[in-house]
Length: 294
Image 1: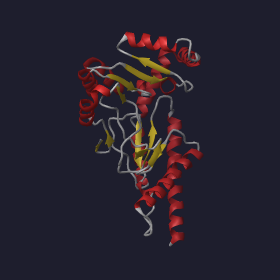
Image 2: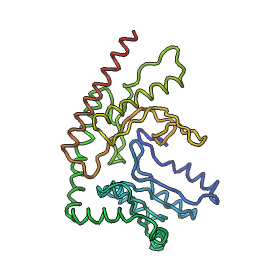
Image 3: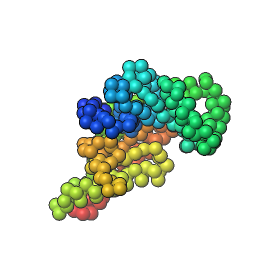
Image 4: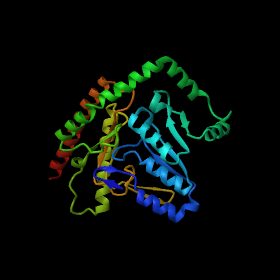
């Protein structure tokens, strides 16, 4: 559900569904590392609910290991309720190639079972990559990277807010997410034509706003996400409204950017320069197009 700008865990809906379909629910999967405006799930409350309902609880903690706030939340969940497994990504937390995962559990039996399932059936490359990287960095090197990220967090959202404000946008207020940050993109949308239906307008504007993401990518800005309002995707006959925003009707088109481990202050400054220029260029093209239509 939406609270302010944040997309948060709807505990009332989850509890209601578990009471209604509890005997058919194998596990609850929560997420503690996600793109703004979604914030980490209330895994401590979910853990209590899963314990009461006797349902497995798996936490997707993809890049949460680098965030002290997130690890504290997960530790609390393990103490107050039920957590069966926590899955973390090696590439997002330890700067190694994509393809590896770390599985953590308060229950040793879970780890042993997982180990038996994958024994001899998976590539050893992710383990070797992680081993080499950890030997190269050492504990002090990894702690230094964590400290650098924490230091950049003091200025990253402020600078992102300044650029957003310069172009008539604003930073989404999501204090519970300290890795991913969102900026509205509402001014990039053109006015609705008189002969357009709401559905046609939403689809056309969605494509136009998505092209802003393509502009960023062509300028070597990777890792950002651009999410139009009301995006509709159909997969295997199932409609997903508000695709990409974790909720059906988010009130803004927006983009996200992450202040994650491994990024340098010089890279961050260059990102802000390119973002500023791309927003200005997009707005300029939009104005020329509107003037030509007039």
